[in-house]
Image (cartoon, rainbow, N blue to C red; front, side, top):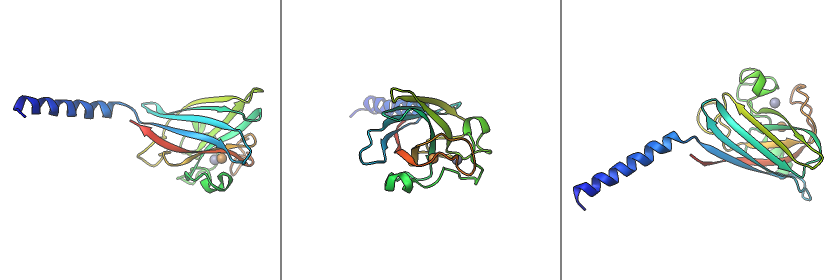
Amino acid sequence: MNKDMLFRIALIVIILFVSGLAFSETGVAILKGTAPDSSISGIITFEDTPEGLRIIAKLSNVPPGKHGFHIHEFGRTTNGGKDAGGHFNPEGNSHGYLPADGIRNAHAGDLGNIVVGLDGRGTLELVVRGLTLSGGNYSVGGRAVILHEKEDDLGQPVGNAGSRIGVGTIIISGK
Ligand SMILES: [Cu+2]
Ligand SMILES: [Zn+2]
């Protein structure tokens, strides 16, 4: 291998490294119903952007109405979603609505509600300042998204949203 070849290889490695830094980190959670006979499903994508963490949720086969939607502390999906623990809340704040209240005045997992239509489908798109996929005090990678039976009415301590009807682990999928 001559010097010119080595130089070209080094250049390619540097370009790959720099372009890797430029791309934002992405993640995904595949949501499944917690009941054995449930047909609830969903795909939630995550992307780190300069404005915050972009979260896009697309659900299907969910009963119509509003359903509380949160990030819970642990990525475990077992035991009907209960093993995911409580709302992700590293600062010990009161329950709220993160996009409006901010990271100091809500749980870091308080994403509000998803509205599901008569066709069983619901979508939600948020850009949440403060959250990341990895790194820092508010990283959501490896935690879980939980879909609740009822509306999150912002009541204390966790929004009165009832049981956990859907759960999925947030997996970091790429840079
Ligand atoms: Cu929840
Ligand atoms: Zn909460």
